[in-house]
Amino acid sequence: AQITSQWNPDLLRAMGSFLIGFWTVSGVLSVIMVMTLVKLGTATMLQVLQALKIPVILSLVSASPLASVPASIDSLSNRLGFSRGVVEMLLPSSTVFLRTGAALQYAMLAVFVAHLYGHQLTPMEMMTLAPVAVLAALASAGSSGIVSLGFSAVVVTHLKLPFEAALPLFAAIQLLNEGPSRLVSMLCSCVLTAIVCGGLPMERRVQNEDVKPHAPLRFVLSHQSAVVLASCVSLTAFLCLVLGIGMGLRQADNRTAFQSTPSFFLPAAMPGHIT
Image 1 (tube, rainbow, N blue to C red):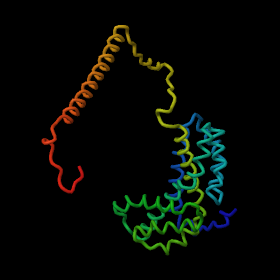
Image 2 (image 1 turned 180 degrees about the vertical axis):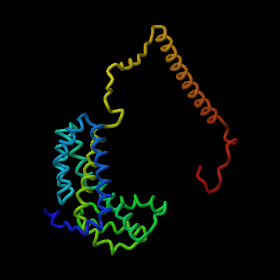
Image 3 (image 1 turned 45 degrees about the vertical axis):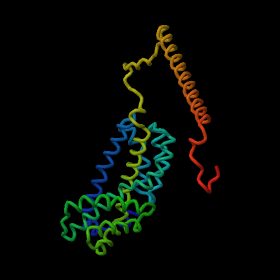
Image 4 (image 1 turned 30 degrees about the horizontal axis):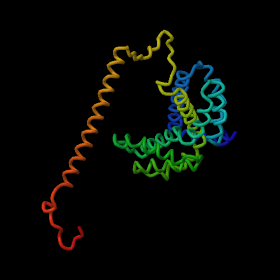
């Protein structure tokens, strides 16, 4: 009802190219992420769609990006079989900070404003547009509506273009863009959580049961080898003992020779020194 109350045919006709482009890209990305969830899990496409039905609806119509978090946790853990501990720890934080939909909206908005003013994007501007859009999306975490739209001015200013003329148009259709933006962010958070639940490749179970485990290494010491080893240890200990005795006798001889040396061979004490 709120969306239809702001349905303006003239405004939709003026901003139709942006809305169709943004909705199309959001839909394609959503399909790709749903297929990724099917590949990461054990459920079929139909089961994944049924499990994500409530989170998708909440993302499209709710006013807060956090409204779909409880339903997403229930869908991933109870219906799709992912680890509940990992899902409960990772999904809420990724929903707040992983704002993929907002970054996509900011980037497409900047491109639309550039075409509106007849500005041709250079390759350098295209390369730097994505990082700037991501930073603006991270800065807008926790905000929605017109407040979040204000952060898009950072992306447009990066292209050195005015944004004041186009701001009222985007503010009027912001309600139509928030739903697809939240949907993309929610599905991206689900995919990231599913990847973490899968673990590293070395942690995954071996699916092929025909692979036999390697035999453990065994060190066998025969009787002859034990005798040789004991002899070497005994010989080493004996040599260390003889070396210690020889060093002690040498120090004792040096001390005796020093004490038996006549005093006139010793250097005279310097005046002013205590001998």
